[in-house]
Amino acid sequence: MRWRIARAVLLFLLGPPLIGLVAFRWLPVPVTPLMLVRLVEGEGLQQDWVPLEAMPPALVRSVIASEDARFCVHNGFDWREIANAWQEWRRGEGLRGASTISMQTARSVFLWPGRDIVRKGLEAVLTPPLELLWPKPRILEVYLNVAEWGPGIYGAGAAARYHFNRPVETLGPVEAARLTAILPAPRSWSAGTPGAYVRGRAATIQARAAAVSLGDGNRPCGAP
Image (cartoon, rainbow, N blue to C red; front, side, top):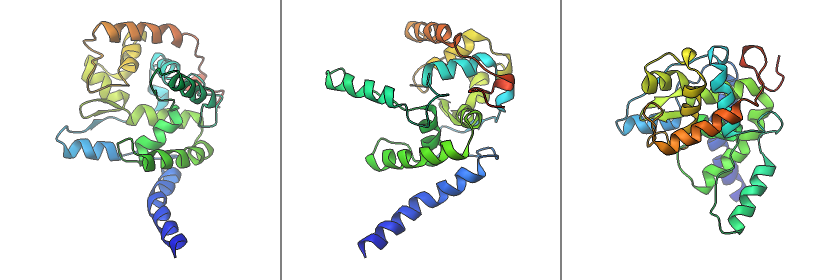
């Protein structure tokens, strides 16, 4: 009986995401749980879906360099980064996140906001099939279009207009690095009027981004 209940609960939690994993392999993601939560809280919802090919290469490089430097070589989990975070915690340096772009995409698209253990477990369950069903460029494309970039602002297209009053396609390396720099706290930091910390962080990201190589059409990881 307990197994049946557990199986029913697991099916209830994972059924819709598994369907979404197939559908969103090709279709734009229209809304995420976080978007709905923020909308109910009165923050509005601005999102303009932009194909990966239309994103400025500087932004693609900046996001990979800052959020997941080994994006092209891992299978969803960066075990080296996880081990580093664990060792830092054991040394008393505080617990920091070691989420990959794949993990962030899985939780952003399919899971509710928060830090509870159930959500973290489901994120770990959903990441492998995401990596299996979606090529790396698609994972990056979805991430860039659903990431929170300000109060009620989602995706790079809306973020560029909100922070710079410009289309995302026109952003250069400086603006791209500043947008990337505020991803950890997009509702507190500003890319358009950055403080000293964001400017410094953006400069570091811009320098690291120069080492990220992209193929034609912003398709990283040697994807065709």
